[in-house]
Amino acid sequence: MSSLNRLYEMLAPLRLYALGRGSLIDAELAAYGAGFALAEEEIARLAGAAHVCIAHGQALDLHEAAVGLPNRSRVDDGARRELILRRLSGPFPPTRAGTEEALGSCGLLDPRIEEREGVLFVSASGIAPGMSADQSWELALRVLPAHLPVFALAPSWDEWDAAAKTWDERDALGRSWTELMLVGV
Image 1: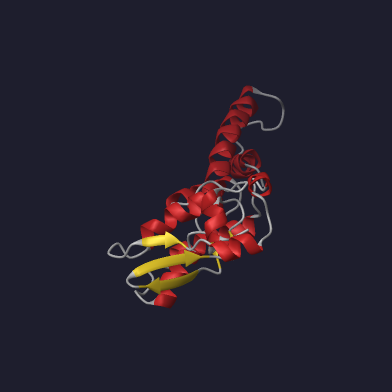
Image 2 (image 1 turned 45 degrees about the vertical axis):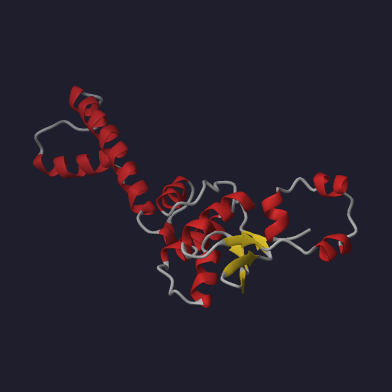
């Protein structure tokens, strides 16, 4: 029921006004009703944005910004919610599994860590929809242990050659070096 209808419903039993006859009181109530309708729309929008699970559209933009993700408005709402909730599930334990989960919250799909002589090497099977490898890597550097040097695990020269792609073919993929190192060719 609209605000205007609720106003009429409340005032009708009083029998003080001649309602619904195009009088000045009808015009005044219509103006009040329009103002209340705007306030109700804003309240409904805020209520819809209150929790990630029920948010959509611009409300998800706000949630992404709040957890440090780039705007991914062109991505399915479900995928957006999943990554937001994953970021909210931290802090992650300082274990290998916890660190890999933290990397997953940065948009790296199926992240893997290798440690060699106190240096971490990170790779992934892909990047979350709507994010670039550079954006994911930047977020990853914020969650990885600060006391260890970290690098994207680039393919070895043998793996690079086994992909049987020329440099021009690799450039034509339109992928950044970060993505080629993290995800591979």
